[in-house]
Length: 177
Figure 1 (cartoon, rainbow, N blue to C red):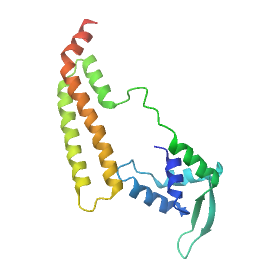
Figure 2: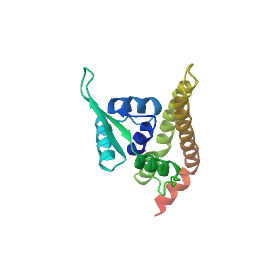
Figure 3: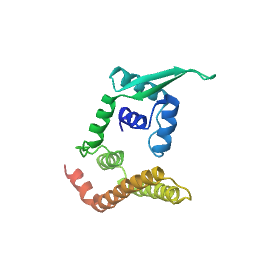
Figure 4: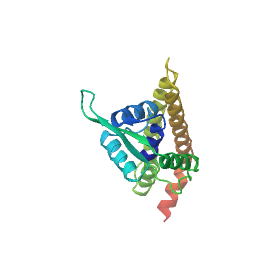
């Protein structure tokens, strides 16, 4: 996920300072990897440097000094382009689960036991996400992010089931090589 574009999107609602952007990110992307304050401010500096955002004002209002940023017209165009561009499907499998199964097969480990344990962990996470999205008062961002995660976990589970059914053949191929 591009912090640059996420912050530009959050600035679309109006000028904000870094603390506000971090809080808004956590609200709108509740299941995403947390965005560190340092990353927010570094990204804001880069947006300003690149002409995609600008400092609107710096003030303290009796508290710590805060700089408020706003998106520029160039930032709005950049965000529109990014949001409309199709994200290419990943060309390579870069999943740790896949790697662990392959390594277990190659090293004489127990890929079947690993898949059973991983399946249990996935099922537990799916129950947690289902409870989160079913909770009374769950906001749309929470429901959407839980649905996204559940769909990916389900795909992993289907792959694990298929792979478990092929372990005998896969192991025999490695042993024959």
